[in-house]
Length: 92
Image (cartoon, rainbow, N blue to C red; front, side, top):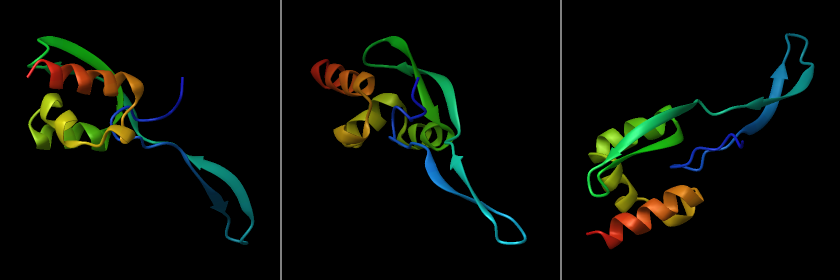
């Protein structure tokens, strides 16, 4: 299972832990992923996605999953979300 947000495309970043004596050790900054169930009004079903906390707030701000998928670019989305975007646009 990849640690990538299905709606925003956020993935782990690389960096260093830096000690007081300026020793650097490699580390990963993981995204804050949560498994969230969204309700699609147009498809009339619940959809479960692994998304970041920021993506959940973006979906709320846009007014729901259907509105968010309409406004976001296709290349940021996972394959599952791309299929949802296509099926929402077809059922309009």
